[in-house]
Image (cartoon, rainbow, N blue to C red; front, side, top):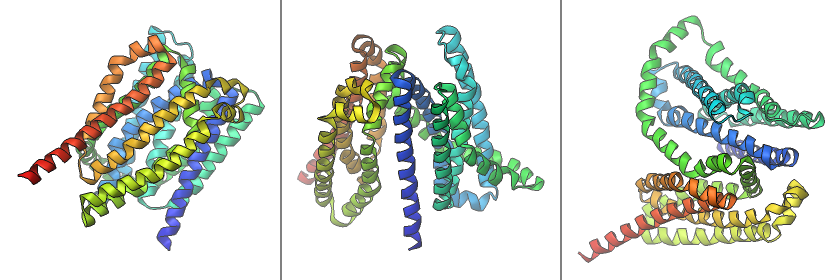
Length: 422
């Protein structure tokens, strides 16, 4: 019973974050328009990359290493918090240098105005991610929900204040985000620094280097994979914002926000199917696994197909209801994304099959080939096809992953048949 209650709080927190994200994006698009919203989305992509790197080096290893490390290092969480601070400082320095160079070389006007608020928001997000993951380890799901609820309330109140007072600028929006995440900053300061005494500080510093080395050995290949994965999925978006314009990225994000409910379905599939698939393979064999994956693919495929039809056929009506008359012209983007999400959906059972058989190498190669394709073709597609080039690039990178997965599965099956014949 206690476990079910904790899971309910966890599910409630996920729904709260997804709903708040959808609502805030909807308000920003209606308020700012696709051009300014695209500028905000480009900043969002950059800080999500940095957060992903932090997760690879710090929080993801923490989940696996916590039982052992907590026994060996009494102040393990404080030592990781110190490493997080050093990582934040390094990121702030590197990003500030990158912003200054971009401003001087390309003379992008708005960069000089957002360096400070952007780095402050990034610091808040990194602290938020680490502190929240620490509470995950402690399984304090109800507390997480309460703090996230407070953050969501501050975001909505802050944006409402900006709207009422007509303060529609990127700097003010970043200021609201920085204030909204303050509850997690206070938790970070209290649990990891204020609550320890002078003697504990010495112990934190003594074990810090060893903890950092252990995490680096665990995470160095994950960090490389994170970079490859990020480039495979986001390079067309970043390059599109630079070549076609931030308005193009704003339109892409508009479509993704409209179809955000599909991400919830994908998350449900990720949380339920792989575990059941592994159990079926272990208990009943490979044929039963194949039948199970076919059944679940058809089941979820029907649901997603109906949803895509409901959304895409009257796409202009949905865009009018959600974002206003100005955005009705982008109905055809919803059609493109319907095709993209079909490919993304079909990649899920392929991934589940590979993971059930403990075959993970194709994931790296799928990201690597997609990243290489993006780097080689983005400039040509974006300069010649502009927004259509962005959409085509997103579709083709997903199809490349499909080809890698299908090729691996086919080769595995052929080898199995040859072994049976022998």
